[in-house]
Image 1 (cartoon, protein in one colour):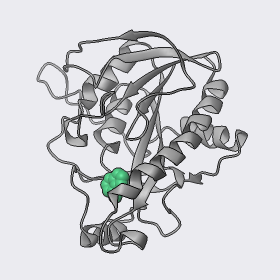
Image 2 (tube, helix red, strand yellow; image 1 turned 180 degrees about the vertical axis):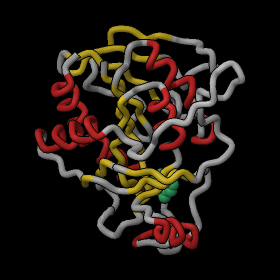
Image 3 (cartoon, protein in one colour; image 1 turned 135 degrees about the horizontal axis):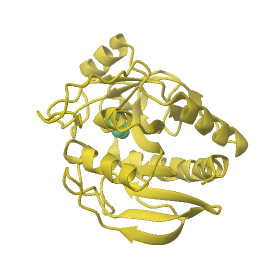
Image 4 (cartoon, protein in one colour; image 1 turned 90 degrees about the horizontal axis):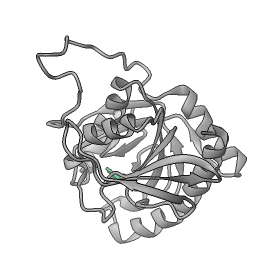
Length: 248
Ligand code: HPA
C-alpha cells in the first residue's frame, strides 16, 4: 500500500476520502499523529502529517522511527515524502518541484537507525542510491500524466534546523554538491530503507536558499506560505495520479 508523509504546507489531503484514523504506540514511541486511512481516486492510501496535524513538531523532534515503524506495521510498502526545501541550484526557483535522487546528511543527534540495540546484530545498510528508483520514476510519470513539471534528480542536503542556514553554509552545501536543502529528509530515508520500504520524495521549493536570489539578505518567511500553498495544489494532483498508477 502507498503511504504519504506530508510536510509543511500539507497536513491533510482534501482529495482523500478518509475511512478511519488510527492512534498508535510503537516500540519507538508515538508517531507524529494518528495514521489516516482512506482512498484517493478509489485507491487505498495512508496519510501521516510529519509535523503533526497542527504543525507543532519541529524537524529535529519528529519521531522518525515511530512514523516509519507505524506505516510499515500497517502494510505500507511504498512511502512518498512531501518535503519543502530551499533551492540552491539556480533553476530551482520557489514553486519548483523536484524528485531528488541523492542525499547528503548534515543532521546530528537524531535517532537514525532501528539497529541500535545489543540484541540485534550490527547491521550496515546499503544507501548508495538512497531513494527507491522505481517509486521515483512513478512520481515522474504521475507528474507527466497530470501535466505538472518536475525536475528529475538532485542532491538533497538534510540540515539539522530548526534555524535556516547562513549564506556561507549554503555556499558550502553547494560546494559539496547539494542542489536543495531541507530539514526532514534524514533520517526518514534511511529508516525506510532499513524497514525495506520503497521511499521517494517530492521536494517543493519554498524559497531560494539563504544568500541566493530573493533571499540575498534574508529568507522572507512571509512569502514562503503563499508559495507552499500554491505548490501543494500541484502536489495533490500528482498524488492523485500516483495513487492511480500505484493501485492498491
Ligand atoms: N533551508 C532548510 N530547510 C528548508 C528551507 C531552507 O531554506 N526552506 C524550506 N525548508
